[in-house]
Length: 371
Image (cartoon, rainbow, N blue to C red; front, side, top):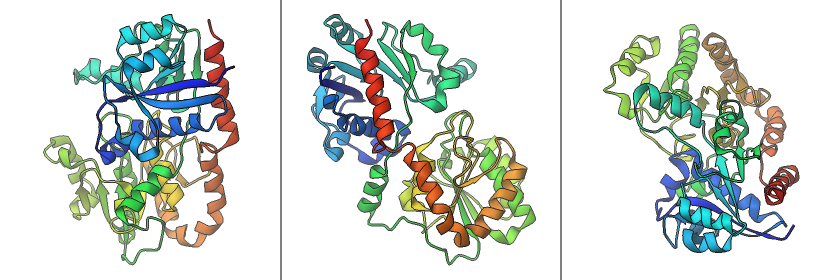
């Protein structure tokens, strides 16, 4: 196989680094995908394809990734991976007509979004490229809900694309903020908990993390100083939100705070000491790796890595409360002993892992050999 010229679509003209990287996981996914492709000997070059136009992009500036506009990219590249933006169908069809390949990279739980759009009409349902593509890559945490849906692409090549991560985005955020983000014992008399679930769809909301903390607080109220619900400030006028929080012991004690969206490196240490989270059909999440890498307690319900952090079963807030209590009380003493297992877990997804690189090389080879 010849060395390939590969492009990854992005929304053209993005200049805000914080928004591009931290407003959702897509920005980081784009960075990690570009960086792993640049590590492969099978790839000659990897660029960001600005859609519809744009000769610069903040992710390109930050990580040294070249940027091309769509029209020249469609004429020159061997592969375009549609990930960060929808590309013009006519340009993609011209690329495929000359032998180029189009890959639809499904990095979100688009079927759940479609369910919600149908039920509520909120307008964020998603779709895959309707004019066809040569391969569909689905992240493992979304395979179960999405793989049947991608049949509408009529692609003969629907594959799991390994989940990928690297601490580079996290480290850069910490450096820019001039902060020491790694775990250290707190001087606070009780633990300050943070919930970073985005509250934009049913997959990741504040409900179960709050219920887990509530279970712990009812048994040991002195253990918890406060709980900060990030990505929730817009919910303070929502009757369900205020009623739900208000009936808890934490709410009645004035220990629940609805906050906006902040980089996690800005919050860890100065404002929170542990992260509580809950997901539904989203077992792999950059939030998890960032918290684990930095060494802070992560109380989570992901069956993908029960060996790292403090795991409780899905939708089981009662057990979660006990796990939270035990984890917080033992973290300082057991952190060093647990660290090797955490690093082993993170290595499974690291773009420097040779096996992960081989898996992506095999995916490229398969799409290039397809007719």
